[in-house]
Amino acid sequence: MENAVRVIGDSAAKQYIVVKIGSEQYGINIKYVDNIVRMQTITRVPKSQPYFVGVINLRGEIVPVMSLRRKFGIEDAEPTGATRIIILKPEPQATVGFIVDSVREVVTLEEDMVEKNNVNENAVDGQSYIGAVGKNGDELISLLNIHTVIQDKEQI
Image (cartoon, rainbow, N blue to C red; front, side):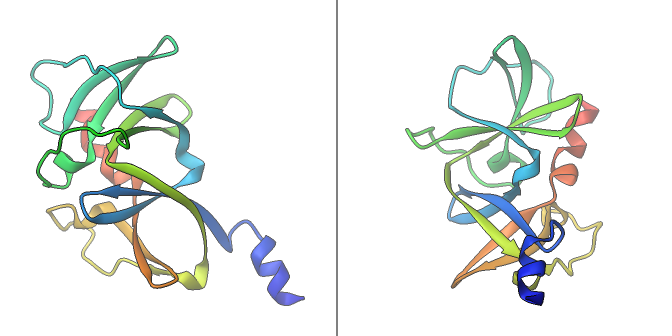
């Protein structure tokens, strides 16, 4: 019975959307995900950060879009039929899109399946973008710290 309470408790298990960027898998906490849309025309914005691709018009709302490949220092790839834009709302008045190579699945990870990232919080080269690592069977999923990933975007 104690085990059932752990699974049902909202702090014990969290759901993540698993996305692929290059050969790596990343998890995005589902509570931040507003929508997943197919790749579409992106309007460029001059003099923006290199990882900031531009903006899209999503049902009348202008949404800034960033490339996680560029943000993480991974070489750009041509969009495919699997390329998606994950629309996130990390705060009620903030919306941002992340371009990912593909969306794989939604997984539920319990606390004992997640290990916090022990890398220095001030690390460079994207290390601080990973808040934890989840274990889903034999696979490891790097769980993104959404606020850290988008933090630089707000300086545009």
